Length: 420
Length: 123
Image (cartoon, rainbow over all chains, first blue to last red; front, side, top):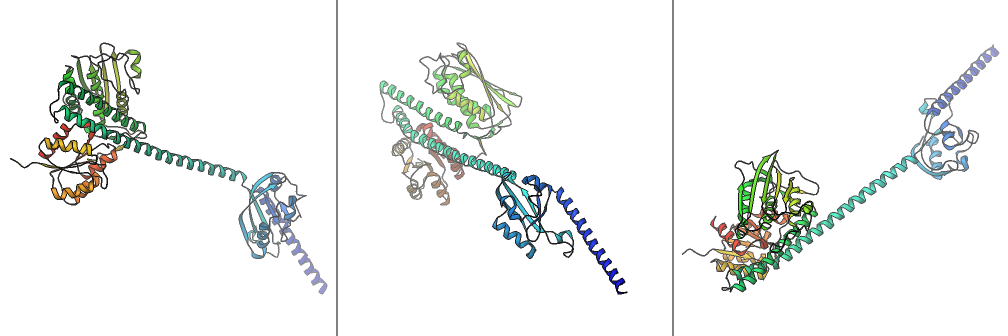
């Protein structure tokens, strides 16, 4: 009876242990299968931190065999490459304290694969697998991730960021230098203009008889002084404009502008020189042109320069014709003279700095050679176009096309609203 | 006979100041002067001019600040800025103070400045 009972009990126990063994084997197979398919190297360690097994990737990545890995203490693997005190403490605390750790970073020169950066993650696995402790011995799963390439690319990104930062700083410095330059130009032009103004006003008073009548010779000499001084004033203004253009600081202040009125004013301003040279001005601007959205100050300078050149470089008794027409969203203004013309081979250079026609003889004003360069830059600032047709000895015609609708902003330009 | 129009000229360059003073006196204006903005404010309160002709860059108080202070004091006589600074910042600062005229000295003859002042006073 007892024997029978004992035998039954034994059988039951045997069955139980076989079942447990089967279960353990099944679980083990399952774990190994899962672990082998994972694309990261894994180690499974027992409570003494001895390697129970590793997955395929571990062997591939570290170029080691199961023989030199299994049943070895982790600290003895590959010549002690995992013998890192901090890692040891972390691993030893996992089972007793049910701890885990994430993303412990190790940089190490591994014997067969060289210098790598590994991220280590570890945790106990029996509970996660839902297998009771009694059946399955507690184990540690140590997962490794090779982040060497990732770190390299992050380093590259941070290098890129550094380069961008450096470029930004350089740009800031450049802006600072530009500001200093433009402050300097503003200051210098102010300093130059003050004594020029003094010369201008006192010679004007002398010529006007404010200090008593001058004889004709005195008048002539002071007149020369006055004209020379005017040229200096023009030069300073032109230099100031050029420095603004070249620093991209040409301010464009758009407002609806009556181009016909503007042209009338330009002609009126220059009436004394027109009369002095007995030129005939033919004003063929039609009624009813639309107002254009442009900068009247810049537009004025453009036409002052072109009209001024027509007056100057036409022999006395010449004819200057102004025309305007609306065409393709633009107003095209023409200023045509019967002057000395520009030699054909020089025509492509008229908008360059310091241009001077070879046929400009004595008896013509000494130009600064900067007016047409400035004129072209101002036309550009107003999104316009300028072109010419000229024949030596017959005359020159300039055309300026300005958009009716306004101006497109170009890089480096500042558009301000009308402050008035 | 009508009373002479009185203008205040604030200008720190003595050569320019005396040219302006002489020209305006010759043209029949009553002229009071100042060589900086601070003096300009004192003279303005005392003399109550009909028009201000202000330089911008001056010691102590510049022309723009002076114009602002005149407004604060309730002095509303017209202002014309007369300067050799022509950068935009100055133009917009000046025009923010009032819609006054802004003349570049070296571009203006005395004769035309006198015309401008007379026109402004006639408004």
